[in-house]
Image (cartoon, rainbow, N blue to C red; front, side, top):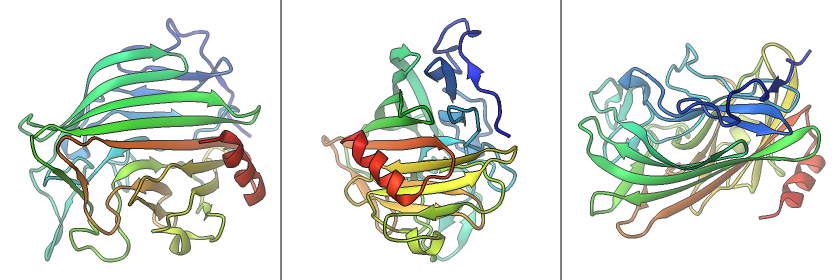
Length: 297
């Protein structure tokens, strides 16, 4: 049984409050956006979307899970930004492994450009623990219908170096961890009862799709309280790869530094656009391909 849809009608404003604006599709709340969450610095404080729901009301994100408390719904997060941990948790140190360090920063909201029921547009700063700004970000999030059973989440982010020099983005993999642990970028911690199914057009299963550069990647699962759903991710940028976990926990990341560091060059902004189809039910590959193609660029 799926949860009842949440109506936006009872909210004082369709976009919610300053700290929890809402996204609405067809009169139903499909996501909340926690702009300035009050979190332990070790959890990588940053804006995040949670809960995200299907149009039928099924929750498809998890936040603050016991296994990885710093996994926060759907968010942008990178573990190594010029040596600053903006992901949360322990930092992977070459030759040592995961280590607790006093190196956590924060991704902070600095001002709105636009707020409406179907779009949120704002500015952010990626800061180290002393408040020094490493990156400026302009982020735009939109929600749009995709038939009666689905909707599109679109997140565009432009990162600009704020230090006067190139800013380097890294991951545990680029710092020496084996096993394809190249996470860091647009990360989605899913809510699933049991191990979900992940696939691309050409492959199926965690081992086969982790590190892929496929145009789309789908995760099909059932929510803990009931309700089947499918998430279809698209929007890898040049050099990006899919980081995927299903056995240890359900998560998908459009990873910026999967096997080699990425650079936000001084004076040259980095543009990313991430798209997620949030659909009720378990979609088959042909349906997924048709929906992605029909959505256009």
